[in-house]
Length: 204
Image 1: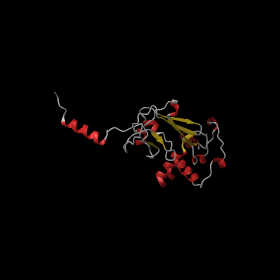
Image 2 (image 1 turned 120 degrees about the vertical axis):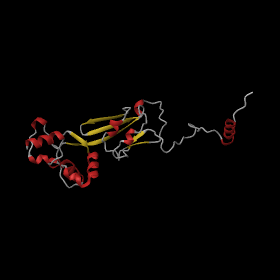
Image 3 (image 1 turned 135 degrees about the horizontal axis):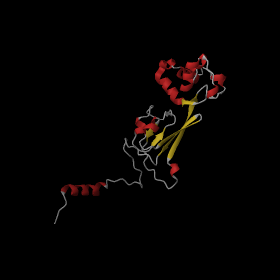
Image 4 (image 1 turned 90 degrees about the vertical axis):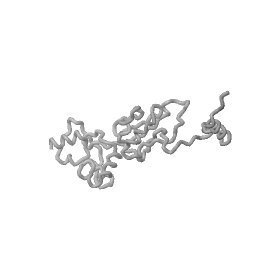
């Protein structure tokens, strides 16, 4: 006859007195540890729409779509592997954060397992093309401090946010097709896309 090991007998007696080690989930909510990696969530007020999370996601669970005037970011929790790369590479360190939420089972449609946010673009004063999300360029300007005044686009956007500079054409949007654009020297001091800036420097 084989007798149980003393260690196993000790654990069995302890479990009888103190109760089982396992949690009573789903009958009682399970509280994860502090550094538990749950589903990632966008914090819209802290996200600047830079797209760094989209570029580093190994599971391609984050989608980025640029349409006229705005950028759409979507995180799909059904394909996310909760690796934490999005949070680790976020330039603001608060734009997307892994929560402690792990119970994602649903009997509904898979398109419910996602979060979508939209960010407004800064558009070129000359041709109207998307340049960069407005919150990102403002974040960069504040990060650089006085150094932002060495770049015309950064300087003008920052001054416009402070209501210290007027928009192009007195606030009226008037964009021309690229083939009809005629650049003057004054166009170099505008918020313009890299293509228009290159043409403005060459033709003015």
